[in-house]
Length: 195
Ligand code: SF4
Ligand code: SF4
Image 1: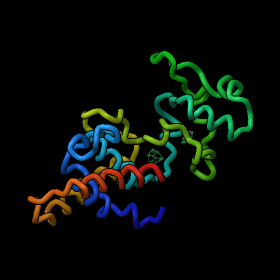
Image 2 (image 1 turned 180 degrees about the vertical axis):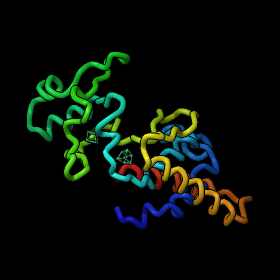
Image 3 (image 1 turned 45 degrees about the vertical axis):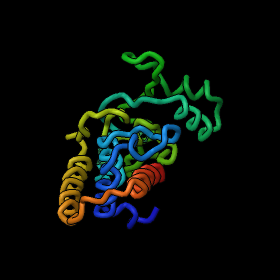
């Protein structure tokens, strides 16, 4: 992924376009992703995230949830059977039946304090991938800025500014082309998936 693709100004323009119409207005029933406008804001935040590499998220905080596909990736990476990986690294989440947490979370055993990064970055669980802009996709709730994460606070400030600038630059807001809106929605999701 080229850094220019994640340029905040470019992302702000894509975001404005992507949210000009709803998913229901531009996707056919079968290929409708059903994301809300708030989801697209969340995607934009993730894309332009300015991580300070402070390590707070990997060394403190809430339990790290593990999805079945996360566990499968982990087992593959460690070259051990999935049941062994589950036994060694997970514990059932006390609040959510069927959901697994990392067993040792403070700090996460995959955190590399020297390099200030994740030892399994490419395989990090979904829960880590969506941090710090927590929230369930499909929800209309506001994007939640995590105050303990300096990157999330800075990113939201940047996004707010560039969206405001982009909005001012959009003199002709009358014509909204559904094809362009659909392409912008797909672009945002595809950039998000590639990081
Ligand atoms: S807490 Fe935020 S800024 Fe710090 S390492 Fe985690 S994501 Fe990056
Ligand atoms: S798996 Fe990686 S990104 Fe997730 S908490 Fe552990 S060190 Fe951090």
